[in-house]
Image (cartoon, rainbow over all chains, first blue to last red; front, side, top):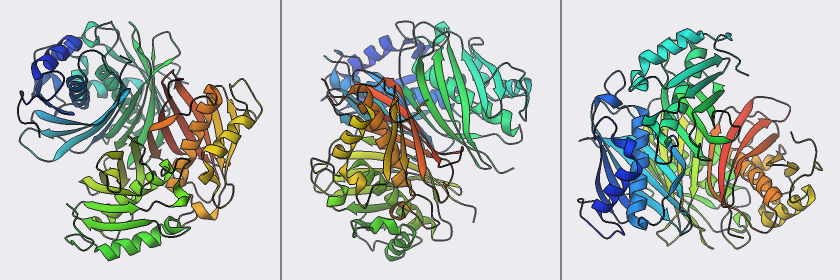
Length: 148
Length: 148
Length: 148
Length: 148
C-alpha cells in the first residue's frame, strides 16, 4: 500500500516526518545512518534498517534491540505523519513476537495504525528481512497522544 | 533479594554468566561499557545501565530501545545463570509497559523468572531509575530453551 | 482468504476441526451455541460469536472476556486444523488491544498463523463487528506444541 | 499487603467497589456467584474464582477465558476502588502469560497497580491456585480513564 516516499495524503509530508524524527531521535544515527524512513501514508509508514556491524549478534543476524528500535521508530513515524507535529506521542506499551532469525540481511518494517484516536494510537508492525516474505518479527504498540 | 554479585546458588556463577553475556552480546559494549550485570541469584538477576550520552533522548532521559535492551539482557542473564551454558535461549516474545520518564539517571533492572521449564522460560523485569522507587518500565519476556 | 467452511488444504477438515473443538472446549457452548467455527484454511481460521445476552455488558456490547475467548478459540482452531489432532497445543500467552466498542452486534474473528513451528505456533486475530470493517480488537497468541 | 475486605485507605470502600462491579458486570454472576472480590487496598485488589463446573476444561482445570475474566475484573476493581465511581475505566490492553495448569482448584488473583495516572492506569495480576504458591498466570493490563 505504500508506494513511495511521496505518496502524500498525510498531515505531514514524508520529508517533514523524516526531519522531525531526526530531531527527536538523534541517537538513531549514532555511528552512521542505518535507520531510513522509506514512506509514509494514510495510517502507515515503512522503515528500513541496514545490515550494519553495530547491530549484529554472533552469526551475523540483527539483534533484538535493534529490531525493537526499528518497530518503535516506524510506529512513531506513522503517528507523526498522520497527526502532525503539534503533539508528540509517548510510547506506553510495545509487544514483540520474534518469529524467525533474519539471517545476514537488512530489515524492512511495515507499520499500520489500527487506531488513531484523539488520545491513543495503536499500531502493528511487520518486520521482514530484505528481499524475503517470511515475517521475522511482529510488533504492536500503543502511544498516548498529549492533549492539544 | 539479590544482595551481591557472589550470592551463588545458581548453575553458573556471577562471573561465568557475565563472561558468557559478554561473548554472546558483544554489541552491548559498543561505544564503551554501560550495561553491567550486578547480580545473579536463584531465578533472578539484576542489571544496571549507566546514564550515558549514547542512550539519551532530547531531555536527557534514556531511550526506549536502550531500556528494552536492558530488560532483554537481564532476562537472558537470569536464564543463563540458572540453566547453565549448555543451551542458549532464544527470545520468543517481549512486552513492555512504559510507566514514567526516568529523568536524567541510570537505570536498574530487577529480573525474576516466573517459570523455568524444560522448554520455555518466562520472566518479568522491573526497571527503576537509580536511587528511585517508582517503576519506569515493566517488562515480561518468554524464551525458548533448545533441547539439550 | 477464507471462503467457506470446505476450502480444504489443511491437515484436518473443517468438520474434524469443529468436532475436536467441541470435545476440547465443551464449556464454549454452555447456555447454548454462540461460538461458531466458520472456516479453516492454510494457516488460518474464522470464527463467529453471536450477539447473545450472556455475553453482554450494560450498553449491549459484547464483553471483553467473551471476545478474549473468541480469539483463543480461533487461534486454537487454526492450529488444530493445520497440525492435526495428534498433539494438543497449550496456550502460553495471549495479548489483546481493545480498539473500539463493538456496538450491539455479533463478532467475527479472522485468525492468521504467523509461524507454525515444530514446537511453537504464533498467530494473530482481527476481530470486527458483524458487517463492519473497523477493528474492534487485535490479538496475538503463542501456543506450545507438545512433542509428537 | 491486602489483609481483609475492610482495610480501607481507598477512595471507594470494599462494599462500594463490590456493588459497583456487580452493577457494571452483571454477566459475571451468570449461572451463580463464582467471582468474589475479597479485598481492595491502596493500588491493589484481590479477587477469587471458585472452582465451578461452568469454567472447567476436560481435566478439571479452570479455562483460560475464565482466568482472563478474573484478571480483568481484579484490575478493574483496583482502579475503581482507587479513583472512585466518577469515571469508568475502559480496558485498552491485556496481556497474559499462562505458566502452569492450575489443577482442580479455585484461583486467587492479586492485583497491583503499577501506575495510576490521570488518563492511564497500568496494573499487573498474579494468579495462583487456592492454597498454592506457584504462579498459574501473570497478566498486565492498561485502562484509559475518561476525562473527569
